[in-house]
Image 1 (cartoon, one colour):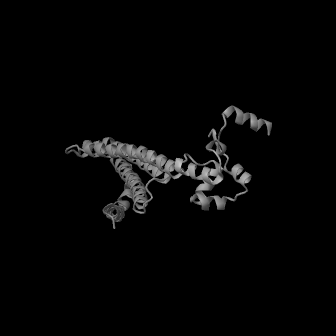
Image 2 (cartoon, rainbow over the protein chains, first blue to last red):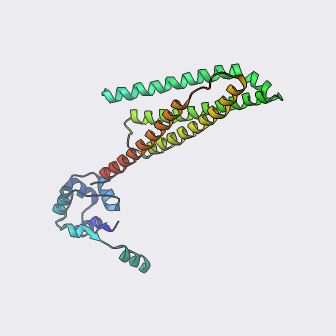
Image 3 (tube, rainbow over the protein chains, first blue to last red):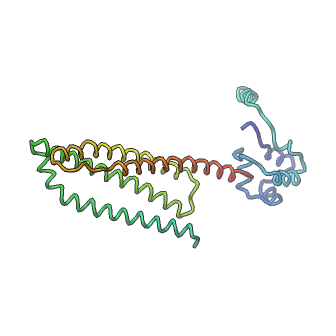
Length: 78
Length: 164
């Protein structure tokens, strides 16, 4: 998928653990893991709202659009 | 217990009963026909060879029927255990559809070739089995349609499960 979830980046910036986030947001660790690994098909506005509230950020800080072309370029560069 | 659950239980045990009945009929028929079949197989009479083909056809049809019923039983077992929208059920329905179509084709061959030759040699009215074959084909089509509905259901469930 072209949408990348940067929860782990935001967690590192806020120096917060995944367990702490799951407790504060009120979603299970397994669901957070699905979100982090990019397996999620959709995200509810309420969940996004709660994550942004806890991490004190905007939805754009968590979600990022990456076109197939740029992904390929990144892959070649690495 | 929910009404739907009771219905699945009743259907599941009915299919189990059908399997037991199938085993009984198959065993009795085999005990009766097998010694005769060995005599026919070594005979030089052409009519006896038709008897062998007819009996072999019956065995293949019986085995195909058992395979389809066992797959159907597995499907009912999954539905009984609340495992409706899973990939395994889709593959089961696909196997049931293919099994029913193969069963139908063998039955058509059995009916047209063996039965007609029988009536040609022995005389008497030609047996009518066309409504049965049409019913089996219709059932296969129904299973095929159900498979696509279930595939859509699995996709929707997956989407729902992966919505955070």
